[in-house]
Amino acid sequence: MSGRLPPLTALRAFEAAARHLSFARAAAELNVTPAALSFQVKNLEEHLGAPLFTRLNRAVELTEAGRALAPGASDGFATLATAWRAARQTGAGSTLTVTAGPAFTAKWLAPRLFAFVSAHPEIELRFSATLKLVDLARDDVDIAIRFGMPQEEPGLRSRAFTQEWLSPMMSPALAREFPEPRDLARAPLLHQEDTGFVKPAIDWPAWFRAAGLPPRFAAGARFSQADHALDAAASGAGVVLGRISLAERDLREGRLVMPYDLALATDALYRLVYPAGTEDRPQVRAFVEWIEREVKSLSAYAEGMRFVPAAQVAA
Image (cartoon, rainbow, N blue to C red; front, side, top):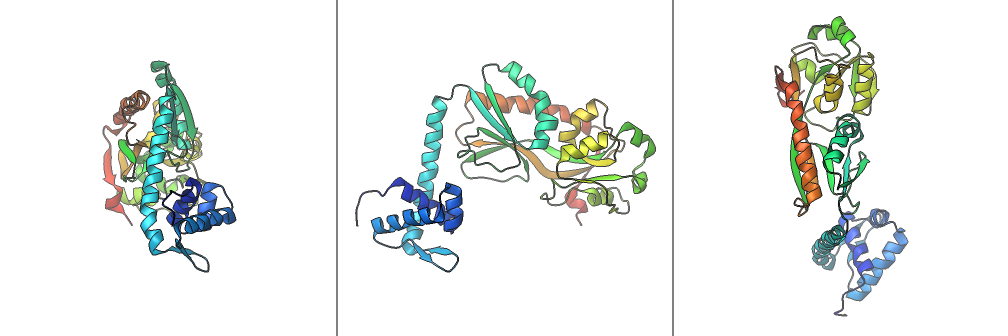
């Protein structure tokens, strides 16, 4: 058995295959064919002089040698990725790459970006609006804005900057037609499907339970994106259970109103996520401080509202 380290490509193939326990998924991640990945793993096993995987019919399992190698390989590539990112950042100037969901980008972030750019002309801001859960190191992203339940992620720092709540929102004309919560029994309801992953549910049945009203399961129009549902509500198409973070501009400019004082509260929140060790980069620090200042404007809409936790009215 050679004491020299094997080729890095072979170790990379092994690490991906050990993490997925699948040659096909590992090959897809590394953008190679399964045959090429299998060849790299075979070379590594020959270098080691022992098998690393037990090949089953449609899966693979780690051998004792594979289980011994996998944690160190994973840690090693994570450390290498962090070092490479740090090296790139030394020559990255003042570039800042941010990603967020399309609805949050369109309704909250984009209308405010001119303020950040004006305050920080030295920072070249690059932005990506996507629902894809990016790998910050692999995709070369500095900050991700994520919505959901709080969680810890290895190698990342997470900073909550606002919690979400929802209340019926509609055009001023519809508000005159449906002045009381009980009037929603005959109102056209709009449905959003982009929060289906949040538990307990933050949907119309939950809000009706919070209001002490009989549930409604009206067909209504359904939208995969919350910003599209808000646009439809502003046009008078129906009543939406609007998320305050996304509806603020429409409320401020009068396209939407919240005629009732009852809101559905959720533990889901918005977080700024960035690689550990980058929080002191001037660009990252400037963006974090700016967004935390900007989000304070949402507090004005909470005044006079009664909040019912979604967990309290869960089905």
